[in-house]
Length: 201
Image: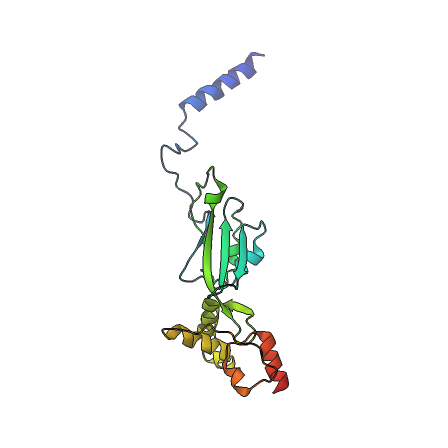
């Protein structure tokens, strides 16, 4: 019976004399590993608002809402990092590869859930015939630059790019006419309107 007690005493003395195993957080800052997966972070320069990250989020921490009302239609992507599990799917499936990434920020505790959400807005491009939402204007411009000369096969991409270069762009939507004209091909159109034009002309 004495040997087990001596072993426990030895372990206690060893633990007291050994250096600390845990960090001294919050008295001292905690340094995380280089590839640590922390809070998702949007890059406003490279994120195009395509919504790929929203589609692959397993917990619904990322949500997407299109608001076509008003003078300028907007898309809002909301991140709730209080429900995020930091899996990295958003970064792995990002269309631009750098639009969203996991930062090293990990101390996210708080008492107000409303303060644990952030919203990013992107201007939507609407069809100039029927008014349907096509995607974000920034996404169309990114596609045009990515395709290079191949973008000339899609007038909508070229028109979106030319609007970006001009000082102003028109956001007017005309009512869908029963008769279609050849000039409609040189407008920013949704896939359904393009299909109608190709079938009728």
